[in-house]
Length: 44
Figure (tube, rainbow, N blue to C red):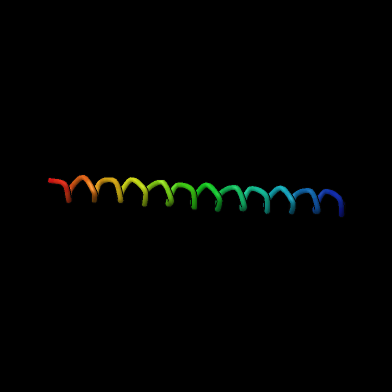
């Protein structure tokens, strides 16, 4: 029983870490794209 709970906890925490990492990378990509768009608008 304890091992099952431990495995579930590890699985849930790893999924949480993966979701946070993907969110951060997505935000980073969006900020880079917005910087490129801002440069393009300034050129016009």
